[in-house]
Length: 386
Image 1 (cartoon, rainbow, N blue to C red):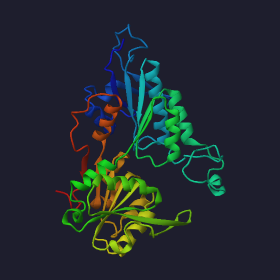
Image 2: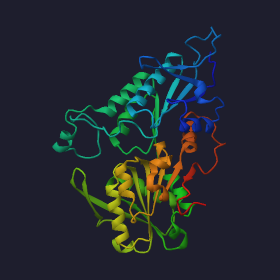
Image 3: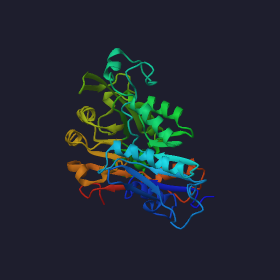
């Protein structure tokens, strides 16, 4: 017999605003900090405990029977990703050891995705042909993403929900390992809605037309998906290719096979799409090509924004007019993390959109979640701020 609602949202940090918002959008009346106690012993060992009535002697070890526990885990300013990943596992184990029927991990920026293959041929089913240099790059390293997926499953996680994971190898192995499914949410609909219903690209509405641009081959599928969502006759596709000259050196150029040629760029707004930015060097070069070709306004849409000093320096260029990102890495909402980029940065907060998918996954009613499925965070330094 369960003492709790059939769906309980919690987090790995008691004051995580992302987890709190998802709980609210899912209709949970209990605060996440009242669901789970996040205790650390004097010897630094972490021990979470699902809170129960101290006088209840009837449901010891079974208070979560029949419940689905949703664990929301995002990057933190206080805890490392290594610490958070271990917390994920212990919270999941606590849920299962106290009777939970299902544990769902919501991790918008999935940990260890960069280590999506290892040094041996059987380490990762990638969507390209690996050569000796690619194997050597991982020589001596663990195949971390597979180990993370296996560890989560062993801890009791049944389902993983993430956002815009770029790695085919990660998507394949998580789909194989998770007992009740792996869901890689696609933010194309969110980006398209913002493009259509805001003034981020004036040329779309003025008649001059819009270009949606993929900065490399890896971004073309997602860029095409956004293009389909927009469904405007004056929106064209532009492909940029790149040639890697070294470990951190890349040369970009307009792909000869691009649907829109170089001559079609002049006088139009251009949106560049990518799943993540870590250094910004490729995007900086891409934006310079577009401005040199006569682009009117260049906007960079990116799902996962890693706010490093290098990225802030590279993207603080006059060739880039605005950055639209999401809060999958929530620290980007901090103005200090935005730095000088705050004057041209907009953050689309995805908690409502993710909550809809969580409720749909659980086959629960989500009709109370009305459009738009995101909220907008923008500094008053941004010229578009009202």
